[in-house]
Length: 501
Figure 1 (cartoon, rainbow, N blue to C red):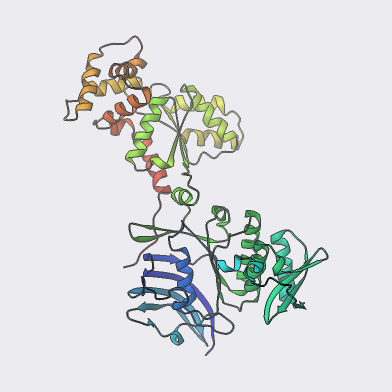
Figure 2: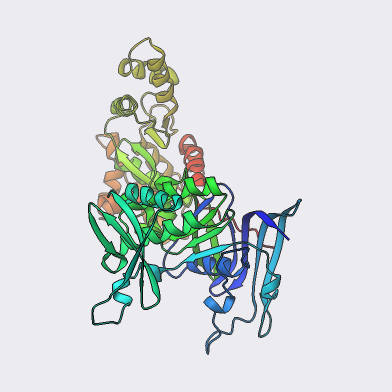
């Protein structure tokens, strides 16, 4: 019976190796890249898919024992996974068929002959080992050479030339002691895989599989980035994506290379991580995913404030919203500089989509005052200037304080109005604040309090803001900033795409 038009939609791994309750989608692009830290199950997904189908024609035939060999520590009993796929059987189209694979005793079910049909090709990391390193001969190796000139090979040569930025003119098959291996010619030099670099050998091996695979095949590549520099890997992705569209192929590859994120218009990016015994899959590239890949925590949300007190307030608010790791805080100085800062960034081409500019609330309190100041910075009657002014106004927020107060005096007034608490540290702050009746500059209310308690300024600001955040006035004070930050933090928080019942 003829089986065609195969398409893999989803894999649900209920229990396999270290993966529990993982759900991963492959819809969208025909190429899927699986990213994640070492030991979090990327290769396990490939191994499971490799065993899920039987060949239609020239595909490879893997069994679960090929990758999940019973051993002293693991018999794999209790393993269970599901594959959701579609295909055409003669003239009948089967949509979203679920095939379940389990091992409840000594054998996996279903029997291998009853698996759905699809040609599978698996490229493991062993293909990255230079051929010369796998040869154990210490003497001369003699081989015969056959030049291959079929069209598909010419296509491989053309694509390899573009990927590796090197002109290849011929593709050869060499035979030695019954073994076959590839060879090429470049710039008048003929050499075999025995003399190839590991990366060059890998590129040819992948391209050969991709270009010779039957239509509708599923190709699995472990560590597609291994031994390749960024430029070569990105060009390889472009080539295999185009070929996948031409031949209705699907390609699933694992990688550690975060630069693949630059090609999310060509590939489905899936981040996998195991937390607290459960496997999670994320379909979007959020800051936490970048952190797992690079060890660097991106902070895409920028909040600009007047001074270090404003910075302490924003950090406290970010912590309350469980998003401190996504937020960076910058200072611009006096309130008048707020308008210059936002205007300069917009004129420089920054959309400021993830930026907020916060003023203390004691000056430029009304929308009219803010607009007047923006008009002085962003001049012009053309539509672009009008758009800049509208955007700038939307990016400015303020802390809400009573008229006639500055932030330091207002926070001091909140503290002295608070009741004694059962927190000894807070109680001392309240008592010291009540002792401060007047200062020669309203901006010194908080610094005077910090000095009395003998704290460094950063420490003192954090402790004072912690106390104010417990007051009834806190919600109103930060209201103009809080909702924007909540939306930004929620947009950057990872949501696992696991829906296994």
